Image 1 (cartoon, chains in turn cyan, purple):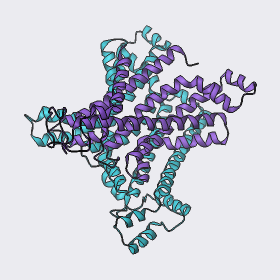
Image 2: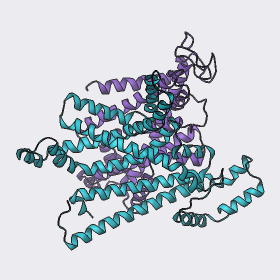
Image 3: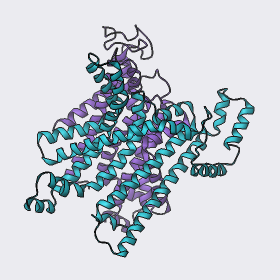
Image 4: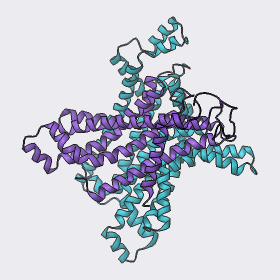
Length: 321
Length: 266
């Protein structure tokens, strides 16, 4: 797959990859800083809200302020926050007093399970819809695939989730045990619903890319050489169309992060999304800040991975500065 | 399909009219319990009642007022902010341009809805906060394509010609770039409106509007969810209306951009 590279080519390739990684780190750092300053300047002293709600006595508040470093100046607080973050410490929850790390770690596995499952569903569905809609122009199946992709991007997860619960309960109530139904509702439905919502955007890019490559001369040449069917489609048609699909998938991975918030609410599933909503409603900002910072890191990581994957697939992208 | 844009337009106009004339269409106060909780449809309450015995139809028509007006306002904030930032950064292409590019990219490193939630964390739950949060949270996502579009227009010959004739930056902005980018701006703004509407109803669905009694489509969907088996209509009505509205805005946006491609933008 990798063509013969001389030493110079390898050096520029390494330079491109290194620059891209540095860019990603810089973006993640700015995003984390942005959340820090937005919250610290916007909320002011978070301990005041604890005091006003009668959750702490003035002496406790003073001690808490000292422990959390709120008696320091803002730049010092920022440096302290960054230093703690580098060591993997995200502070303590204002309400439970437990480390944010621990609170997030407890909920993370459930959310990642949901997000990964949904991402797999989204990819499979998106490729199926995109290929069907691009393969035979103006056919009934192409129209249907397009319509389903359009619905997937437009229907809010909250509503598709509710509909799926309703359908399941009316379809299964007669013959299945309630245990089985609730298992489906906890684990399988959320993955399908969130995956469906993320599939639409990717399917559109698959469709557009395939349509474009099908017009290219190398497709006609391949067809003339007697290559047909799936081989023509997968090897000659789909591969050149992949880089934009990969970028779009990275974008959809970010959508998954916000999508889990709604999905977890609809299906009453524990996870980071529910934790985020609850901590926003309670004003427990260290937890909210931790989750948003984590999301920014994951998102930047996804973008970086997508770029590197595209470079592996498309030699033309490696030469770009 | 040929009729899709017209059906979409008709639906949106109907929803806007319902919202404007809500006081005439609603028979009851949307905040006041008037009958049994979860009552079935009756002549007095044509769609039945919600969990507190409030008239569903009245809450639905008043809900449109809040959902639609806040979405328009939030989209307007993003469009005005994004257009201004884009124009300024393209015309005064100095350090400001770099700063804006950096700020936009940074903000885009956090998904728009999470950015909006972060703002709600700062300002506390509330409908006005949700509006502002969705407006500001969506601004970077609008500014990016707008800036690219302005940049392309600014490098065209007629802008160079105007500059050579001694036109000032404001004149170039308002006489040359904005009129020529109008079609694409409208198409971008329409897509953004769909995003803003989805954002507003998502945040209110999550309860971030603060007041659970508020008649608002997203909040009503959340309330209806709790009584799904007994009275599914409580959730199905706001859910269907939200979905159809988003579908219609998307269909109009697609139609606008296809129209733009067919007739050229300049």
